[in-house]
Length: 421
View (cartoon, one colour):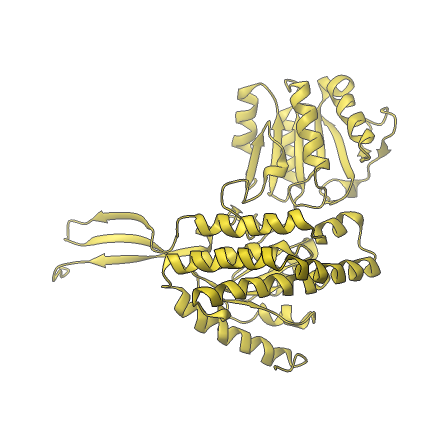
């Protein structure tokens, strides 16, 4: 067994093994990858008691650390959540294999035939925090896209991630694929994260999935390319032409369905003309649901609210807290979002199509929504089976990162003794 205290040696060993596995996985038949994921789903279903026992240890650890109720919810697994993980594995398995897909092809007057085809990235490093289901999602998507992966989960989910990882490796064994295709850093030592960020000889891209602190660390220190998954500072703008029932349904769902996910709404922007009608009704409904509403002076007259500070704008609460302010119109909402958004997901509620079009045109978040809950900001809900994160940058992958987004491409050029004049 490797010495877990020698972090550079430990990580170099993982890197070497992952790179060797990636070379095999790059041309693994689609049916073998599908079989591995189906077998992993079955192992997860059959091994749910072991996963729950591991999760119980993590929940004890989280309580000892004083994690918030929302963070404990992110960490907690139960029967339905394990079943959802298994369903996610099967959904990814059932998708078309992206590797080798012809993205474009054309002929040149020179006689060349050119094809641009999808190809795996190689080895992906995934660094994530408390949610143990990321272990299954990331492992599945990397395998489907022909990439080996090194998973480094958060200290809070250490035992849960280990149990889920064991199911993924059981699937690889059952399908005759290298177990090293899905590796996990077997230590909570934070030095392993710093080591991953500089492993340019082994890792082709890093995907950080977590809060501002984690993503900021990765962006500052990484020498490996990064698909950034920034915090979800999610806004909902209630326009003067918003439908009252749709607004109530969408806002309550977007905030309270699950507060600890990155698609949870964090800031409500209300058109000045509907402050004392629809706006007041929505805020009171949120308060009735147990949400602490931190508001600007334009909403301070609503009973049960508390004053917002400057720090409340552009803040991801991941809790039953929400900020709210009055804006003059859609352009005021756009200006606020442009200043405070993390470019993750933003929503407009309106029945006026030109206003919705203006919102879509003038904002550049990775996901923009019209009359729909921001809790749909999820790869599974987009039909990707699962996601490795919501990329908020502008290069290559953006929005939900599924299997297809974990590929690059190469050009295949065919001639017939063709020479250049």
